[in-house]
Image (tube, rainbow, N blue to C red; front, side, top):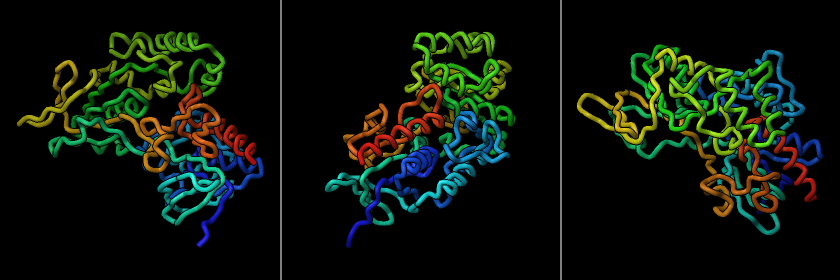
Length: 375
């Protein structure tokens, strides 16, 4: 039985994968997309109710796919999910509803083992997304029934926690926003941050953060870092008395820190005492009275639920050959992100100042150029 042959196989039909579909189509290159979602956009629909995009709408749109008039400038979770579904229709995506289980180099081509059978491709673009496997600290993984521990990916709405004491761990965007949403919902909140981030707002100095990121790409690192430090007192006043400043991250090191943390209201929550700010957590203590967590400095904090906003892994282990991965992430982080001849990654590459969605658009063009050059 012959194995079906495709020109380019794209693994994943989210924003990054769809950008690659469009970029290839503009070069008259056909592609087949493999994605096992029953409904495209459900990755977004599964996140918390109040989630909005951190990149501005017009800078995030998939080329050749306009936004509907009803989409906000900072799209909501459901608006963006619907847009992904709409974009696949506009681009006439040739999709196989299948899970790709393994990608291996064959005889002059790439072999894809999928839940719908085997396929052969001249080139492969892996665009399965950054937020595939939730990461929870090891000391939180086996705590028994005395305390509820969830990853931020399972958080939906604040009123699910009414009357409880919540500890949120993580100083990134999810941790900051979830802490604010809980406090706004009347939940008793303690927020643990290990490293003070660079704080920002979606709208800065009369423009939006995505546009400023584009401008920052043209500046040397020392000026980017200086702007990150100087913007804090200009935007938020003095943060040191509240434990929120100065930044312990350099804005130019965005690939490691995933950029600035946007303030959705949590800074005022800390100032007002609605959110108690504490340092790093390193253990869980359980006593007869209930459950508590232990800070690195020895302080013990009582809580009923821990929400770990501690990041994700892409889930590529076993799918890609081990030599292409570095701690589960693709090894090659330079454009066009060709991990080995004919195999590319999109949407899985180091972040830049313009953040993920605008970067995906740029990456797709570079990947498509590299594939076209191989013809």
